[in-house]
Length: 285
Image 1 (spheres, rainbow, N blue to C red):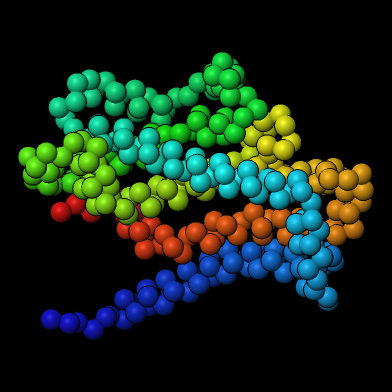
Image 2: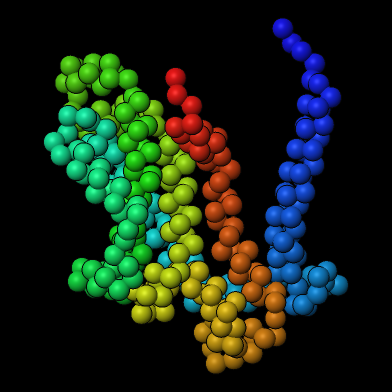
């Protein structure tokens, strides 16, 4: 039977909508400011003239174009490797009969609480001969312990009848994973894939630590060079610093927009699965 909302319920709904609307504006207005400022060479809240000169400038520099390519490369390959590695390990750990399962899980949980620190990690990367290679931006953070545990629990929820029937028909473990488990786990894979992609795309600290060659820098390092070290410019010519000074705040905002745009494009395609994956483990049955 449908019941009409009470007065308190209606007041709560109104207050809830107003609060969420205000919070939405607080988050949206700075982004609008960044986009508007990127189309101007003026340092004002609302520019009097709009121009594409800032975008023409940053796309005319080979360093920036190359950094975009590096970021795309490490994001696509790194996300694929992370999802593959996480899925394989989570699938193996979803079997309670796996020998040493509890000890492996204990070691995984330990990494969520403690880590080796910056210097030991750097030494490990160096000993693996990954210094000044793009592998140093993908391999050290290849598997997230938290995503692994959640994905393992998700795999454990796949009906055993499906897996057993497939094995009776002669399916190998790899076939079971690819044909049954992964298709049923698309919401989880989409959510964690987006998390991995955003993390890899936005990283710059590891690039500063491990990458010595400027041509291998991802776009976030170039963004840091412009926003924090504006006097250095983008680095394609001797007057790059003067060009940055000429375009002022606009060129900084343009780089921020360009570096954010790819992730904004990907999200709508994953939104359906992402909404489901974000609720993993919240409801059972």
